[in-house]
Image 1 (cartoon, rainbow, N blue to C red):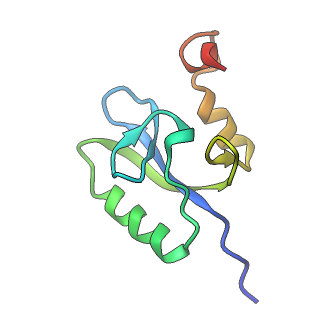
Image 2: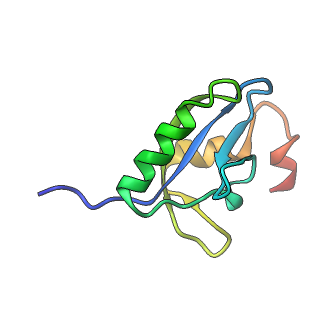
Length: 99
């Protein structure tokens, strides 16, 4: 029996800055997870992933990350994505200062 589809977002790293970015519904890249498009259909998720992987002049390391719907947008269900969302861990700066 196949596993049920878990909602996902398309995520990557910005090519020039290295920042974690998420694909928004309008096709733009955003640094805020709350603005990411939550994909609830497996076929749609695969299409968005394929489209994003072609944007090699903007991003690297494109993949689908498991998420859960939240009041303020997608919420990570795995530690890795929660950690990536907060940015570098070596100092309290950048996105960590906003949290």
